[in-house]
Image (cartoon, rainbow, N blue to C red):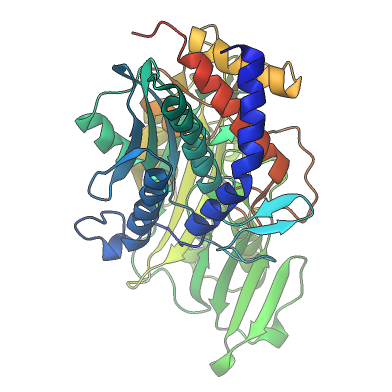
Length: 474
């Protein structure tokens, strides 16, 4: 088939199926598929909602003519068998971060408004997963019409644990061979060929830290997001507390007050323009509440962690020529039953530092402040050469459809691509898009993306897969 004819067929196909694709996005977005290990069970290792999202995702794939496999609720895949068992694959995820606060649109629905689609997961990553299925469906139709199989097997992988550790893909690669090449539609254009190291750690106070004036403190929803809200309950009457920008006071019973700090949240890897609500709250408490010595010391550590986003306040600000600068944020703070308080950190680091060095520095800080510290997870930086044939194929297709000559990027976000020997992240977000202020970003309230952006992404994915099928893969 000529390239021109292929593109004409792709245009007609996308126009034909688009409303069906949006409805399938709606089906998945209706499921609040946040990890819930407290209700994990056989067939639902990450909780019932992620397992249900996977089940529905595989049902959609079967309806679209693919052969689905559910790996006991851990992960799933749907195949279009080719002449060779060698695989070209896509991998996306059907789990989400918690909904959080501040939504103006229904988070568990797809709202069409002024050219945008809005809902939790529409960009990250349920919408793109549905695009991957409809890209495969194009080839299901093509095979049925011509009677000729694709040169390689096309596999669409659906993960259930991307937002909470990626245990799903670790399990997958222990039980199945890696594809010859795969891309994940879970990041930015033009193409992501490198990802910073992703590091998570936890500071923990001694038991009984809360008490006296400070009754409770909490903030954030997940370690890998900058919190837009944090709050504390204090044993001080609200009328005795001063007003402050971004701070709301709510009088409670028994002379207690809830102090709520509202900042501007966002993804941990993209801290520019955010305002950490924990930083606002801790600063207010230190200035206006009579803290015990232990509380003051621990909250000073928290303040040090959350006051900057480049690691400078904690002594790990580094950069390199390939990945740029390290980022480090405090994502969650929480009070537990024995009165101890925990503060998480998320660092995205280049090759000029290691996870071991970050751990050593955080342990020093913990010792200086009389607190505990432990590593939660660490994944080293990932990079694939942008000159490889697969990368050049995707890049050329993107440039043809957009006219944008941008070069491959490296990012601070962690995607499934880092787990595979030959992989990359490929759209669908366009960093240069100037969305209106009522459209939110991934992991934030009112998460949205331009509908035409998704339609164009589907075309790019179909043509890219067709071209990957023409390469000489191992």
